Image 1 (tube, rainbow, N blue to C red):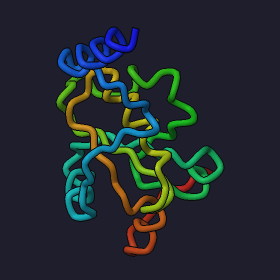
Image 2: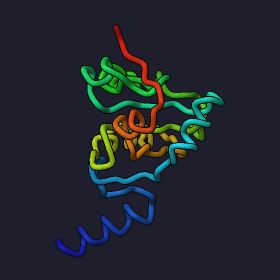
Image 3: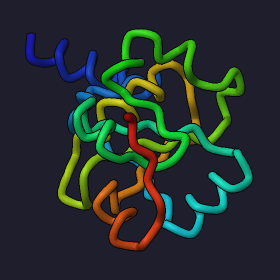
Image 4: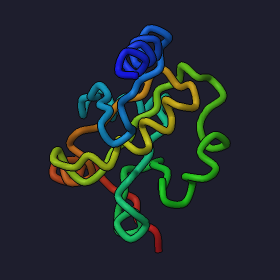
Length: 133
């Protein structure tokens, strides 16, 4: 039985399936400058994973509220699976972004990144935030 489990896991890895759960996956970081340029050039879909209350208080301009779009994520992301998708949460210590990033990856998106500074770093850099009134 043990050999069957090892072989199944090996096959899954070779076939491109990852036994890693969403909350354990990591994604490459995007720098602050890269993100601000992508926003300016309208070449990024941002996903805020901080929760609706935080989102309403202030989020990176153009960011989607993951709490609201989670069930319809496929409809909210661009048609181009190679388009840049960036997820972020509260700060560099937060890992909640992984849920949205993994969901985008599962939908077939190949250019999924993480803005590690999160909303705290965005605000600390002096960038403007959008709030919901």
